[in-house]
Every structure is written in structure tokens, then in C-alpha cells.
Length: 297
Image (cartoon, rainbow, N blue to C red; front, side, top):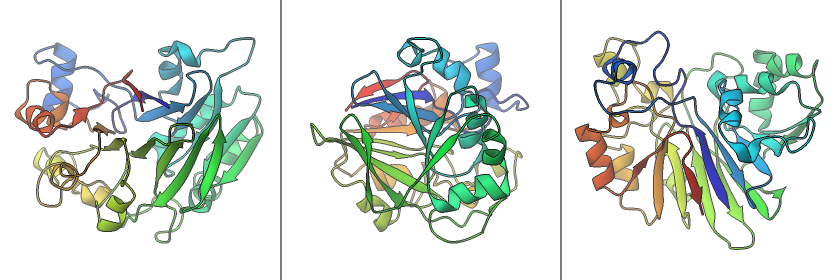
């Protein structure tokens, strides 16, 4: 299978329009080596011809235009076959509204995410006024066929993050996806939002050849220390990279061929290519995604 990182930044992108943190300043003025990034989304394909979108970023139009394989091959004919959602966060779902010109949309989401988008944000109600939407319920732990030899199994990713819309608790608010190429048996995991890399979550990574994982913050108190927010990374639903229980500590020992950080916040120093934090990630055998990164699994 093929994976294409359409956008590698967290919500707000890099630079974020209203942020003057060291990273955002550097990408604007060129004072340190770094690259601008759009908001997090990935596409997957079995044949590099038909593509399935993992989350719909607010930057989806720019991302599709930057990727010729997703350009239409005839009038109003798109290679985009469906959208799979990991959660109902705005930076993962606002792009759905930008797909309203399509003839129809196939949407894979858990009941919790679907209900939030219909009853909480009303995003689906708005979209359905423009194009038909077919909902494919995502049931964690159950295999589902996408087509072209691709299948997925979603798994629940528990979170205590306060829900802005919809119910506070219950399963299915956040999921990861195990994507399997039926011809080769190779597995990739997409996990852009995870609060804790618990034993149960790490068990879902067994046999994984490529992991695209939450790289939002370097330190748990990163945004607090910069004076940009009053919450830790974990309180916002994201495991930090560094520190006890961080993703470097938990993931580096695992037998995964490629581990790539995605959904990277503009404050994270790994975006600065000359930073000590970036060197440490690379020394541990992990990668920092950039827009346009393509991986054959």
C-alpha cells in the first residue's frame, strides 16, 4: 500500500496565523531551517490510483492540488473514494465541507463521531444540503473492507479530554486505524491523536510495519511554559514525545520498521531541523513527517 502525508501539522498549521512562537517566527523569517506545513491528513491507496482519505483537513483543497495522483481524471471524477475519521475535532473534519462539490461522499466514522458531527457541530447536516453522504459505521475491533485489497480495523483510543460537542465519555470518541494490504499482509497504523500509549494501545501496534503517530508536543507542559495555553498536552488529548511515559520512551523499543511523527504542533521544536530535539528523535530511529512524504508499505 501507499501512504501520502497530505498535511503533517496539528490544528492551525505551521506557521499558525496568530502565533509568534519561536518556530512560527523561524518559518516566516527563514532564520532557522524548517518547512511550512498544512494541517494533519493522510491518504492511503493500494494501487496509487484510488485513494482513501484519513481525516479531512481544513487545508484539503491545497493538499489535493499539491498531489497530482488525486487530481480528477475526467469532469467531476475524483480518485478520492472515501473519508475515514479518527475523531470529530475541527482540524480533522472541517475539510468535509470543502468536499461539498462532490457527487457523493462515503464517510467512515464511529457512532460517537457521527452523532457529534450531526447533532453537536451540525457539520454533517450542512454538508448533506450539498451532496449525499453515506455513513459507514466504524466498529472498533471489527475488520472492514475498503476495496482494492485494502481493509481496516479501528481500535478505541481512550481519552479524558473535555468534549466541546457531544458526550463527554464512552467509546469511539477517538480511534486509530490498522490498515492492511490483503495482497502482502503488510500493516500500517494511523494514530494522530492518543493521550496515553497504554499497554492496550501498544498491543494494537503489533505486527505494524509503519506507524504514523501523534507528535503534537515535545513536552507535556510545552504550551504552558510558552505562555500560550493553560493546559498540558495530555489534558488536550495528546501524549508528549519526551519525558516519562512519552512516545519516545514507549515506542523506540518496539519492532516497527518506520515510526513517523504526524500532527505536530507549531510549538514543537522537532519542526526545527537543527534542534537538539529533532536530532534526538532521529537518533532513536524515528522520523518527522513533512507535507508530501510518501511511504510504500
